[in-house]
Image (tube, rainbow, N blue to C red; front, side, top):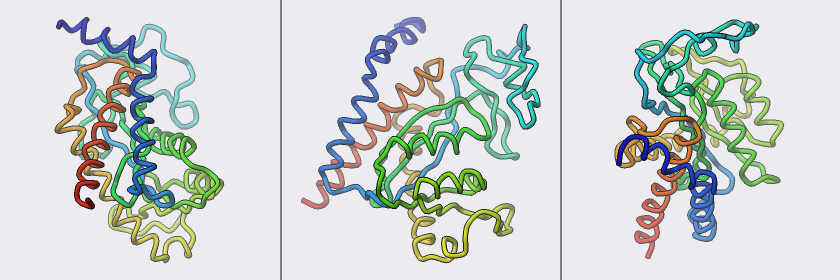
Length: 253
């Protein structure tokens, strides 16, 4: 099948929300399996290399006067876009890495076995991980006090306060360049035994990212546009859950 076919084939399935319905159906099986925690969760995001080249980025013909940066500052995403995938963004998660055309894949996992209970894809950006985390949390169960483990990328006062407003206890890492930052968490949150457990358990999320990138072929996505990439990402997350669930159930049989 040619590239045009690869791009067009998912569209019919996307419109029918097949990936989201598939994910929800498997999630329903997990709910009845006894494998899920309904109180303790972890959130994280990972870069998904887009099917675009750095050299495909060109200056926009009509860039906005008001940028998307702090105070309306115009950023690269405001002034340039890829000619092959306009929704891909040049982004890097650390200062040591090079900016690459990419999207961000986000997962919400439960802390008992690291199973994925929410998954989505966004355009790459410095606020995208925190914004996606709140969306995934709002899609989940409400009315029960929960905890959320996360790495230092989520250590931002407005995000931490947004968790508290949702009755979610923030167990967010506070380390930055080797120094403990004490600007968001309360002492009772920071010093609790639950905080330490959450920080240990959040390592489980890396297993899902490793599987999705290695076995599901997400080291570089082969589809263009955020919507298509999310469609495939949700299918990959569902496949991960099915394999993980089958192994967990077999071990308890």
